[in-house]
Image (tube, rainbow, N blue to C red; front, side):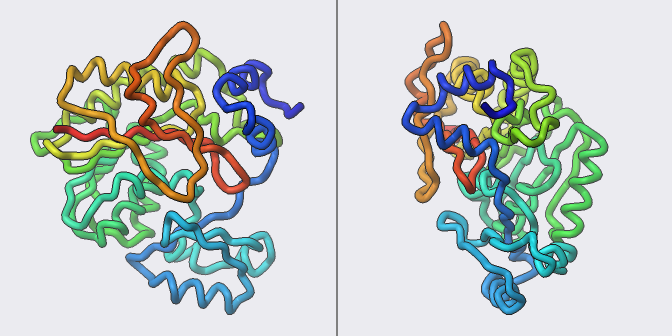
Length: 310
């Protein structure tokens, strides 16, 4: 049995459909692939792919994200010395981490809020999708993570980011946003690895509850900054229903109407059903529209919920 807490396995067996449980458990003991995103503000993907192939780097395309690929032999000496990773032309990013911007679809000219922005992976991905046109307000509460965010943004070459060092729950502005991303701090269960004790060292039911309260505040604060017709995306890398469907169910009741949950379609990504109940709690049938990523050899466990303000 993999060296993860027994309570985590017990919970997982109630979350993952039985037919997928064995393969999902194996994913926790498998190294994650080296996936990268081409920074289209600095380079053309086709030219980058040609250059990598010419240097002996094997690539695997990602069907749902044209700017991403998996480097198959990155651990070779030629892979470890890729200058594109040093100059910001390529950015190393997990595939599941790339999903929220793809679903949110920020457009050139949009005003976007990234409420939990560090380390900047999704912030810079959205800037590239916007072709460096518009505004992204990037909020980060923790100062050392804020410096990492600024470093990543500087390397990316984008010039549309406005930085705020503060708790996202307290962020206020008179000008509302077209798109908002709340990639919330969470218990990070989707990133657990049996061979890396640090990945799950601080996990506990108490940690889940702590994250849940923070997530509720962030989601509610974000909703108050969304324009009519605007889109809000909430995401975590946790399996815990308390952090996922439970937060969404709470938010739908707390928001009092005017904002609705919509289905997410991302062909090529393996999924499994959202939970409509957990323990003694029964959630709104609307939470069935939430999106759960089934972990496999390429993707980590992930959760998303997409809202529209009418």
